[in-house]
Amino acid sequence: MRRSVMRRIALLAAAVLAGGVAHVRAQQPDSAPRPASDTVIVLARKLIEEGNPHGRRILDSVLTASGPDDARYVEALYWRAATAAAAVDAERDYRRLLIEAPLSARAEDAMLQLAQLEQARGDRRAASDHMQRFLLTYPDNPARRRVSVSLVRLLFDQGLVARGCDALKLGRDAVPMENAELRNQLEFYAPRCVTLETAVAPSDSATTSDRDTTTQPMRAEGAANSAAKPRPSRGEAAARPRASAPSAASAASAAFYSVQVAAYDSKEAASRMARTLVSRGLQARVDGSVRPFRVRVGKYATRADAVKAAATLKSQGINGFITLVKSGS
Image (cartoon, rainbow, N blue to C red; front, side):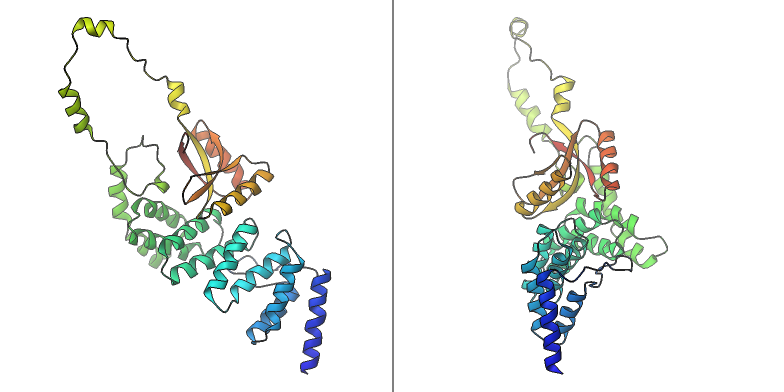
């Protein structure tokens, strides 16, 4: 019996290396996570669950014989992470999948699993970042309801009120009114957002999602310095050239709108995502010199133009949000 099992494993491993086993797509709708559908991956998982080391060897063989553009490679990498014996190994492969295949169907599963691992080990900042990316990137995933509640709680626990209020808006869209339990958990934080909205001026050029505190200019200090200086005489004032006020055109060029589609802790991951989008004909770039490194598309003079661009991106399966960017940031 054992010899026949070993023979079957050897034959299937050879088929993997030769590319002889076709990938079969799942018949059921997407969920998080979806079960494996490739027969080789299914066998490998079964062997791993039985404690047979040949299961991991099959997954390793798949990864060796294929690349990130192959659906079987993505499946093997995901399930090697999902069945890893140690959390550190699982996290490594989930991160690798997000870097190597950010637009694959398994990316949303990997992002959610990674967030759960980070939350389990107490890294609330990393977990909330991945949860927020999950909500913004995968609007149709059924896990959005519980993820949105977890994200709101994590952000407010960290004192990130502005980001928490943004997540609250996403949560209200994700959780239906009839789900009273989850809605009540979300609305618990609503009063803190009312206070924030009255404190933030509409002309503030920083985006709500990137701002965690609100500062007001120190007008009193400027007034004191102005009062301390002697006022020039009329003759001096007439002789002194007047400084020209900045034109409307130069003021407009100081900031622009963009569509943010992702944010990464790693610049390498952000750059890879941007290159993938550029290869699809999009004007993508990486903004920021420190984490999080934001992947943004386009530079638009008006918010209306950015909204149209975001709608076009959504029709292509790419979700994002509008952000007002200061020139040079």
